[in-house]
Image (tube, rainbow, N blue to C red; front, side):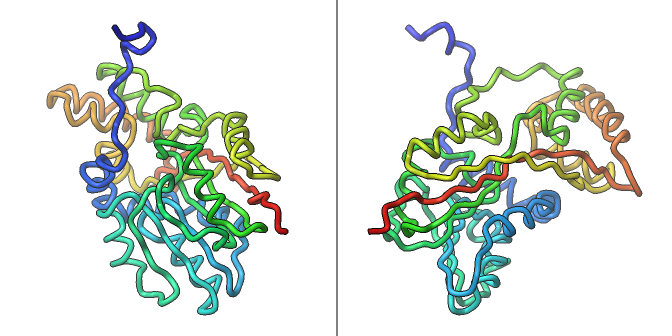
Length: 289
């Protein structure tokens, strides 16, 4: 008999399957919109990373390869960048869009089990790629082992839903009309898996990282025109599945409610709505002897 506390939880999603099938296909179909929208955080990741000439960089959950390509330029031809992602569908898009640099390569694999060469990388980065780890402790430990003794880490991940109006406000409006989804396990892989600053810091320290810094960063995300924002939120985001499954009248009513909310964030014809992340820095913390 299952525990009562688990009875209303949705069945866990296999991340590799999801990102190689429906999730990955949706991501690639919306890749231009996503890259523009979350690109506002690129500078934060790259600045914190501080990649320099000749360094070896590991970009985890590299997605479409935007940050991987920027890192390849930063380390120049004397360095190298490896972008790793669990989705073959998304990696193919990365290769097609960003794979022209000779010092950049992309490989399929998950962070927990990938056989990285030990003590090889100077730097590990990620732009929203680490929240989907099915085995977070094992993944971070494996990544730490891939870093040199003086290696370092710089990544961003989403803070809580309430601190991300770009997701929370439209979803709340939609769910005034549509049935509320089942509550999610806060520890399950997903956008908000590391929303808890204290847990995230403790996790990194437990597997051996030192000098862990977790700082909030807020930016305005551009979702496009009202029409573009509605189309995107209908395909991706907390209310996307409910919108797709709703009857025509319910879907229309929900979209009207979302549009009303988005209108409050329009500046110069574009929806500009707050998003909040953690900017995380750490050191490998290994004994260099």
